[in-house]
Image 1 (cartoon, rainbow over the protein chains, first blue to last red):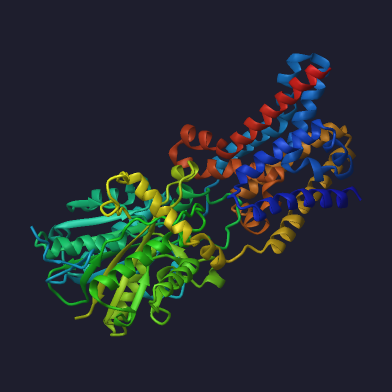
Image 2 (tube, helix red, strand yellow; image 1 turned 30 degrees about the vertical axis):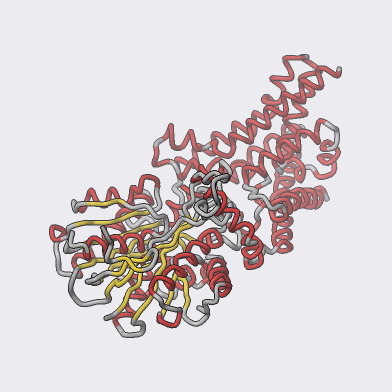
Length: 118
Length: 338
Length: 169
């Protein structure tokens, strides 16, 4: 059941992105989409909207890059509660560490091992 | 000081039209599988052409095409007085490094995808002016080098819009001389930079069409000719979108080209099967179609006189990011079997 | 073009830049864009939307299955989510290396850009492509051409959220 919900929520988030790309007159590149969804996810999370979405959709809400924004925002909020002002600076980066480190390590290794095929 | 070889406002008429003695073309596998595949001299096995990078592959294609055209004319590199070449990469590195290998006096050109026709026009002026005997002009482009310079890395998962064009991987070379057997270049109409305000780097056809039309119309006016005087009017790489727009723009100016107007970007691929969307593009697009297919048409008498317009989108990623639009240019050359 | 000869003394001759701008506007006024837009083939919004939905959904569903496997093996939910992200990032980079991810992306668009696998793809693809320019200026520098902005704005917004939360509390 949770897999079906993940499919639906994840699909819907991507659908929103696709409609933004296709229906706006601007030349929206993947970089714009990724940046937009990370910031959007973080803001929605801080407003308490993204959290319920994660409860319903599980990976459907955390695997899209907006979920990375949610992780950053929640990390910051928790750290502010426990550490105060310092937490505002450390919380987000700490919470996002797993994803960022994995992306850097795997990205580097794969780039060294493989060649582009065009 | 008069200029006796100029006619009308902006066309040059050669008094001793230079002869296209030989042409050569090298293309990548995708072009080889296309409808004109059999007209090319060499089709490479893969996009790397035995090199370690795509830039080096493109350069090697250019070198091979030039060597081949010199061989075909039974000449040696020492016999060539001037080598005119250009490509799409920053600082035209394919042309520069090919010239390093070839050791022929070299003039580097940049006219984006219009470079083939630009170089043929200049070469004709050099020959008709009596400044050289044998001139080789050549261009190259490569899908993978162009993509990463102008758009995205090739392995990035992006969608290509329907207006996007596919850069032709290949190189073409043309050898010109004052005398010999072959079609001759009788006129050249130098293009003006025309900017229609298009900003989408995935829609080059619309950006270039007005420049091509401007050149075609000026050619008609200066030579006193009309579309029916040409067996074929061919643009370089407007693709399906640009071709339709150019036809409409010419119609607005009362020129009916519906029967004899084609575009190299449309001719080179089978768009449904090869997933090339609006068509081919790149320096090599107009280059290899001329060196392969169109030269063949001249040799077996299918066409006697054509107006070729090399079209270039003077696109710069930096300028686009700063909000500039994409100017276009089109250089026209009249080729005739006399 | 510049017809400043006929227009008499009060009009200043146009500068070259003004002429260029005028020429550009002449084209705009001719409704060139309208003509171009009428000719352009449209992207198929419905097909794109369906593809984005099912591919994005499938990637998320795979993520959910991986999460379930981790929790079944006794990982607490939060760690399972982190571990899932790591596995998904690996899958994204690996499929890019094999030359598969760009083909998925061609069809799915946002469906394969938005999932974390797309973020991974945006890191590997430039890194791999610029390997010939060396391991410092090539791989390492180009790796962040798209991921860099994502991290920059992600970190900025998280700090801003933190500061606001601190001021409110």
